[in-house]
Figure 1 (spheres, rainbow, N blue to C red):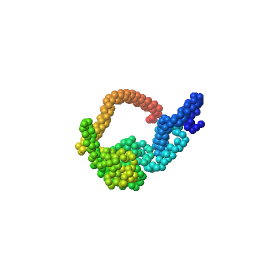
Figure 2: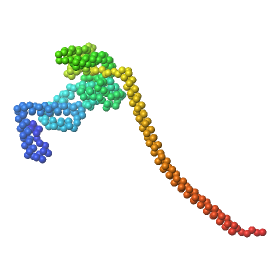
Figure 3: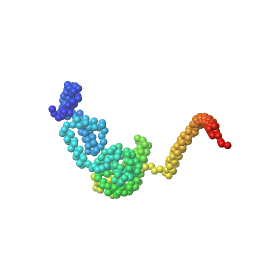
Figure 4: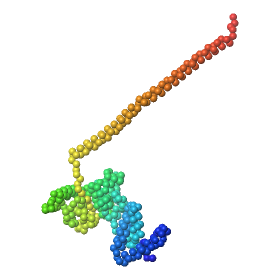
Length: 373
């Protein structure tokens, strides 16, 4: 039996349940597989492609990158592995080994969004500061789901990570001793790129208004304000990237950056990139005072609600007081009745003791000897 035919061999449970039917199904599937293989049918190559992509993505993430996999993904991986021949599995494993050997793994840094080990590209937040030590940075992998996520799972951060924070893109190893100088350069670059970001944001708004008001016969004038992309020489749009080290103020658009490190005379792979994004709308002083006043009103309202709750509890307690007084008066009446009974008994006892005392005196007089004259 050829190894490729074993892909369709039934399991022991299937053989015990319906042996003849399982063997017939196995023979039919094996013959159909050989037929597709010899005719170079598209279904044969599509099946191999799907199994290869599934195997490499799940094994690469779970074994080589230590990423979490769900039970459904594990079942999918097992089904894909059953479709592979031994030589195919060895070849795909060698490709994964090569990918692991040639990729830049940022040792000790995992993605705070999805939990996987960060490889090739590391996104570091400049605004998030840790209370532990300098090397405890907020790191993300270069995927849209993680870069656009809000991270609240880090208890050592002074505030949660927001998608609008300034971030750096790091493609090579970044020693801890360089954190301080790089952060200082990044802070200067943020102030330096703020005017450019404002110009690009304004150009985006103007272009959107022109397209909204333009008719089919009218001509829309392109808005090309601000710097151009240093790779494709096209107009920039937010978000884009700015190199921290290139002296010619290199800006790279998102499309060119997705292709990897561009081949430019001054730019290199160890140059960190700062993300340029739309500036946040700053609130005026009046709006800030209004927000502070509203927060104070909310605090006062909460305090008043608490006080009113306590007052209502006390009023309810006071309303139940008459019942308690009535019960207490009844108990006092019972106690006073018992006291009267006890006092009458005590009087009876005192009366009897007086009678006994008189009898004792009479007996003493009778038994006394006569006096001699």
